[in-house]
Image (cartoon, rainbow, N blue to C red; front, side, top):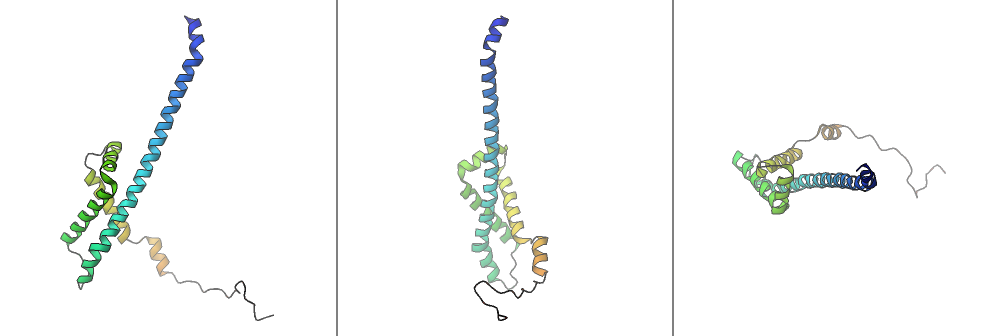
Length: 152
């Protein structure tokens, strides 16, 4: 019996190694796919929010003297952005996302992504605020290429 095990050991080890490599590659590909899907989701959420802002929110703000939306209009804008995001991802994309992430309530999860996209559009980062407030340094008096200086 020991003779047969040593006889088949290289083939068994090769098969085991191949199976382990295949599992590792598949896990890596699933991780890459998931990362790409989540990145696409962020982009799609931002696009949906931008679309609703350009079509719906700006029209309401322009029609009002104070330019402020009511709570009901904000809820309507969120609902429109969520519907746009769902349409952009499609039925299959939503089903895959729910299956891979193990999400029961996809609408609620997508709603958080829409809220995050709204937040990134409305709240300036501290770096952007500091950059806007900082004075610009004067441009140096350096001759440009192709021009002659007057000192020659």
